[in-house]
Image (cartoon, rainbow over all chains, first blue to last red; front, top):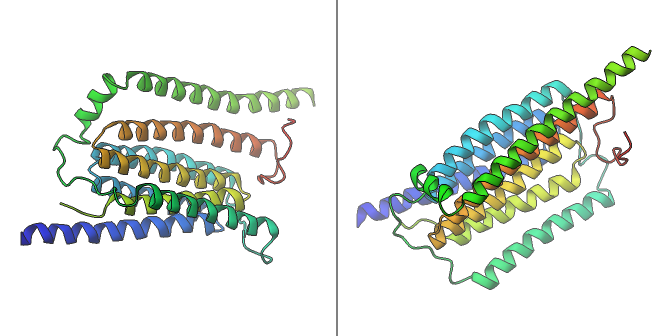
Length: 186
Length: 102
């Protein structure tokens, strides 16, 4: 009993820490003027989200989050930011424009709408069961689901990734060809 | 183990989604717009995984992995566009990139 309540307290402490880091780094991504710092804050956001996924016993998704997002995608972001060069932008400079006021109002109303919908529609019924299988969220379980129940989603995901890779190559090579043509004509 | 309930996770996910929406609407640098889009997608992912745990059903985690793949491909195309814009010596400002004409 004491051990269970101690584990409970540890879960709450980890949840509060990860949740606070998640929210703070999310705000930091939006408010930093240097895109390099924004990308670094997003890495922190993804890492703390992975901790939250672990608390929800989604181990494979947490590992994929760290590998795919915080590893591959963010390296790509940092590479492009380094290639383009950090361009400072002060989003809140010069007083509030009507555009930023409208954006804050729109984002706040989206937030409130979700909260109200969750509270009204599912307020009392959102307590998950304490017991969870030991296989829940494990790689083997996810793999079995992917290859049995969700095979179509798996295949379509691979096609989407292939199309994106082809699109990236075309976007990169097209401009190169165009600049080559300009160089040859001039 | 009974930690925080699903509603707490949904609160975090709603806040993340709102923050990302604010970034998409306010910022003008397309790279930061893409970063804010990632925050919105992650807010959705967190809600999916919380509901997956709540309903004890794996479909939510499968969907979250699919969202992750879609986000990776979106970043691939989006950063390709940013690099193409940069090569054309155009301004990296979504307010000034209002024409699709090459």
